[in-house]
Length: 338
Image (cartoon, rainbow, N blue to C red; front, side):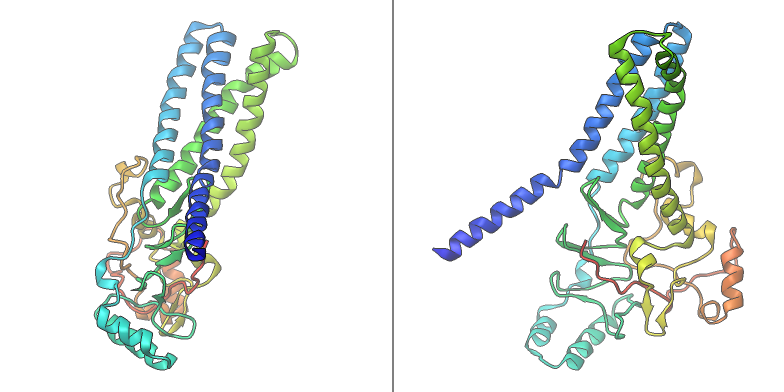
């Protein structure tokens, strides 16, 4: 009886958590839909009198709005990728692992299984990274998200504003969402400013439209400033080929921590996220390189020679002789359950 009540309570709490996790998304969409009404109706159709100006404002606004809505939807509804079955600990090894009480033997069991996998990152103690909840050997740059309840490939962070885990499958969409959000806010602020001054100096007197126009400017500037810092931070991460987790805790390989282990040069770092076809970079279509299970790393000589590493960092274009090899260089040990 008590067990059944506990299970029912647990299910109810999980259900409530899932419902409340959508609150930030609903807030964002509410603000966006209000801004759409305020800009299209109160500014363009009510306040702006010049027909040509009105048409130009509406045309550009709808293009920017559609790009924003498209990228935001992709960031929300693109599911994070998980490790494939080949990283799942087989039943026989799992039994041995669960029965075994000696940590060194457990480490040996995982090490033997991982020999068949493209895994080069380690825990802080040098052991194979293993998720007890998902029962998988973690691929490089993979972490367990306690909110999503699963391991996520190339996990960056869990974002409540999209109610999704940002990782290999949707990191490009998240970056484009930030970029088009900034464009959306800056476009609104720049076109509203003229009429903000006219209402402020009482040259225009429509009180209802005045309220919406004034708040459009304040809200768009407030969001633009917030997004500018966040977008700038992620641009810095992309340029160094790091995730948010890797920025807080350097990836660890059998040779030790190396915060620049995945740094391939700025151009190649960008291609890892956006792909090689530059004409598709600004379109919310998946173009990232690889499968999310393994990643190119700096060559051993490059990792061991600080001068060569510095040259590679400065070489934005990279050279044809650089062939990043999946060697032990760096990866996050932080299993941040956020």
